Length: 104
Length: 128
Image (cartoon, rainbow over all chains, first blue to last red; front, side, top):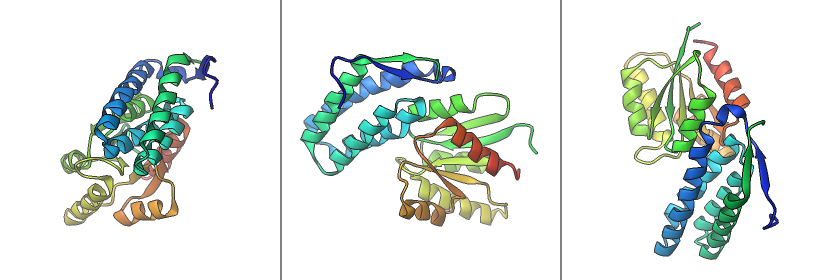
């Protein structure tokens, strides 16, 4: 569990500097899509979002996004709305605190 | 050995397509991108590829079906098999078997790390 006050520094390959902003935008979009899917009870969509986060995160250097994606996907497959809500809140917190340093 | 390898990337996630494009940026590779298996199959029939990087979980047509279709078309056309690397977020023995049974040459686990992707391409492109 992450300390809610702590800044999170992620070291990323400088070659990815041009595409990381788009990656982060997509993760913010994920938060909106998760909220909408939770409201609709659409666990299939939630599973897809989790799968997508899992498949992309660590490739960019964001291992925690991959971990969260795996958790979202598993919770969605178990139709565990509370679990998905918890992981979505962790994603929001992470996105608010993450700082990227391009020296990985 | 080819001067420039032509690679077909079948991947539904925008951020993963961007990432692969970034990893393989440079004069050694020419990439064509497909967002699902159906698009990948259509592109495969139109161009000669040195390798296919095939996501297995995609909408419209998944990677298992697309790879079977690719192999059937190659047989019909009497073409040598193109290396098809399965990209999957599932790393179980059953999943690897499923990819190989569909006709994939090898299985790569997602998320991609650049050194692992380049090493796999180096291994399977060597025969081109």
